[in-house]
Length: 254
Image (cartoon, rainbow, N blue to C red; front, side):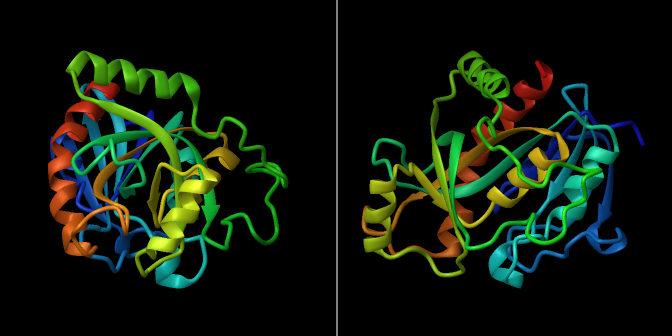
């Protein structure tokens, strides 16, 4: 296997990115020691390697969520495996609800910071100093240079790319209207149930991080439709069209 320079984690309904790989190999998580087996529709549970726009990549089709196990450590082995393979960075994607009425379903948002309300942290417990420090700084968790490359790729494609703060909740229930009002007061621009554990694990291991949310809905209380996972998957397919183009361009210029 060619050493991947970039890892990519695919969120709900965003598996089309893996279909763009050339010289691809696909390995079920079940065949890889320590890799999680996702139990959520829209998460394939497959590690794919190959090239995107000529860039060697490893694509994680699916992730483990806090609501599946009660802890945030489900993606520890895949993220550390990526670092051990010699990768430089990881690009995380997710499906998220927007707290900004101007950034609606089908849009993309580059994450520039996060708020962790998962109630857990993947680094809880003994620390392995050979991997990273006990007390990790998250000041620039979302790499400014990589975020600038995302914006440059979006501009070249004429794809609108908002930026904002992602707030992670444990789920599996969607948020209440009152919680959404509180999250807006806290400064959140999008809300979801993933991504933050991988960011922490990646930074702990020394990987640079970029992340993009595919906006699938306006958050509860902001739109007319009752939220559902089916709605998430349906609207993720719309956002995925631009996201695939964006990721291919980002890989080309990485």
